[in-house]
Image (cartoon, rainbow, N blue to C red):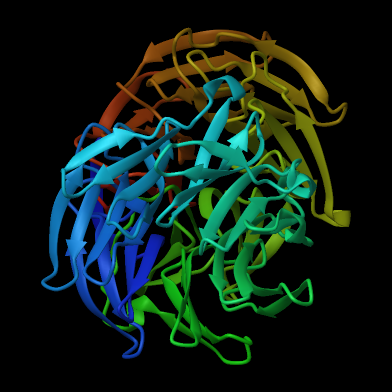
Length: 610
């Protein structure tokens, strides 16, 4: 069937941040999930981006550190088995490869006074890079028998401070650099916290921020290395994680989310004070003390400065200071009412089709999936495990519901059959498995049903009709389950609807048939009366979500848009060679006109039958 294709421009242009370092009055910020990855240089006093350098590999850098005033190091994620540690020379703007670490994620970097750079990664490793020898070595301090993982690191002349978790509970280590001898300095009051997410040290003190138990009541520790009895802890009520810490004299500053607030801990008075909330809901990727002010870098691509008492706060969007947005790796799509929405990183791009225009609104996380009900767009956000509501007419967004803390990774969101609420499928990063969440608008009631699928599968796909929610599972062979919304239980299940088909991500109900599309490209049809798989065919090398548009169904991969006939069950590739640059599985959306929207390269593509 012939189709018309219209390129509607970049799906999303942005510059979200993953990491930052401050030296010489300039803030060095690393991009997050834009193409190509970049390091931008922001002059704090001039409030201007003065340089942007493209990084050849990876999707962004969590770990960024300065090594004196002339060198900045960045550790790229998404560049395993390729160069992923880069050195930037501030004097002439030269960027060079420093090392290639066998890691997917370089979570944090720290520079010692002698120029040696340390890092923590996933898979879990502590490494050091010696620039004079141009050599990288593993620092063998992880005890794998204790199931230790690492997330944060700080370095001084004599020591390393390493934060992470052991067997899922917080870990804070003081390590002698010369001998690699280690000791735990974790205060007992924080022993039940999830992980030590952020650390700083000046050799007198160690400051550490944690994820709170169940992503609530995040913790701050201030450890006196010479006098452990003087160690202090504080709990940040209603905060999920202390994402940055900074020692400045006898004060310790930190930022925390969910609120995005800036705090000051006073050791003398053993008191914690909320100073300001520079960017509500934001994730802070770097916090620094410089020339009597605090400087913070937000994941949304925003920089704030604040006086040490928090009385004066200034917020600057880097895109308004000379920084150009770059194409962003899209995570989700929705369409309707003459608009298309593309979820990215700490923001969502809105495309108005007639007349054509585009804008962006902030949300505190990654929109993993979108659902449009009337004029309201619902966004399922990671890492906070939240659903936000965006009023498309008023242009306002706010938090609708917070999911249970262990269910932090939403994968799918859809409306209840009668439109009175939402169904959200999630995965648990810490526990494994997942859950189905039923949220009813009237009464704001949330019910959670943990692990409705077998074998520790999470809930990746959801479709709803006639009083049932149909759930798609994960793994090599994702299961299919029918969840009775009245009885609130699984009524029946098919453990292998598409053997070795991968995750069952795309689900659509039409009449008395359920259609599915798996991440390995299998299309299937299930008769809901007989509960039997009546059709199974490999339609594409890979797959993703599935939508209904007009008389057809459509599924997408990063390379192809496939049309399915729901009656004959035939399929055909209608667009090939998409080359979509995505973060996660391929997404697509359809509107009431029958148009389908997918990503081609980094552009938004509209496909219409002719």
